[in-house]
Amino acid sequence: MAVKIPKGDARRLGLNVDLVKYWLSVGAQPTDTVRGILMRAGLVSPPPMVVMGQKKGPSGDTSNPENMITQ
Image (cartoon, rainbow, N blue to C red; front, side, top):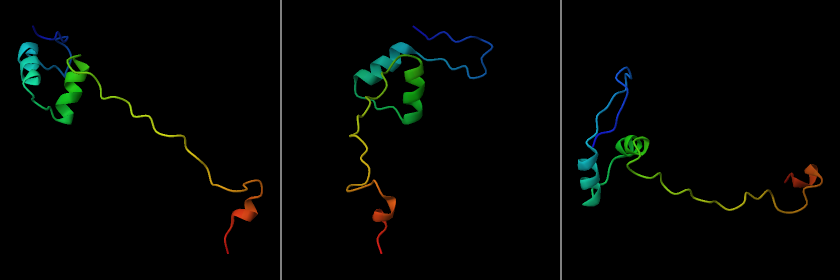
């Protein structure tokens, strides 16, 4: 089974889906560039999103900015 890409597309690339699935199933690790191509073709899922903690501002009294200046 191959991915269909319009003939007029300058970025045309043919993929043998069965071979890609086989190599991924036996542990092949695609490079970042190849992973991007495979994601666009729907053959690999995007990496999980990392949730970072809340961004915290400066600690202490911030009501008067002049108090924050250290001398």
